[in-house]
Length: 78
Image (cartoon, rainbow, N blue to C red):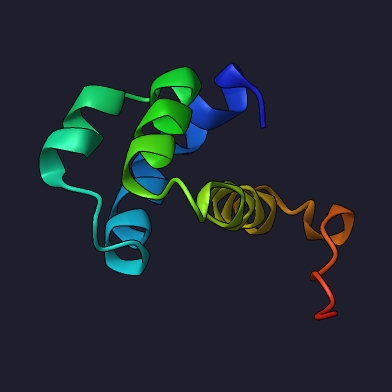
């Protein structure tokens, strides 16, 4: 998701993000202010081992919200 998409989706993402990923604080959400680069930096700080998982989760939420979910396939366990 690019900056324009992220900024448009930010209001819908904040609450589910906080509920799903408990290390993310209200202060983090305020600091992001719809900026995809700040979001990525915050995810790296809070979830360094799960960064890709968090970003994939956010992209899937955006895909559902925008109606373009078919582009995202579930990862298969190895």
